Image 1 (cartoon, rainbow, N blue to C red):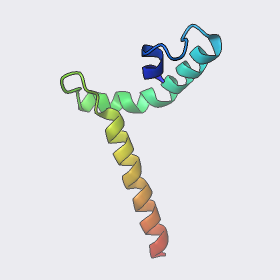
Image 2: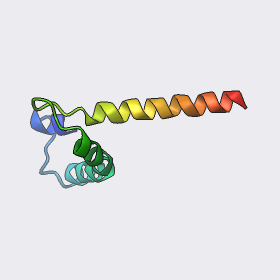
Image 3: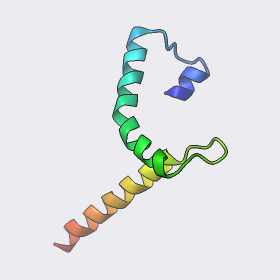
Image 4: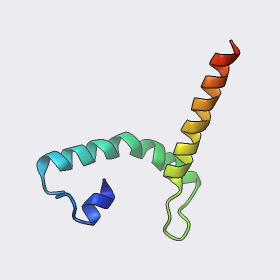
Length: 70
């Protein structure tokens, strides 16, 4: 959503868009902030979303394997 705002495809001054954007930030920022604390950005590239996606994928596979093993 931040890319859509940067490229001016959606208007961030709209009340509804601003509310949705702030809600999304409040949902994911605590987790991403903790990861950013341990892994800094590399030349301006933030790798924390990639790490979260990989972590969730690993957990999903682990849960599926555990359920099949029972």
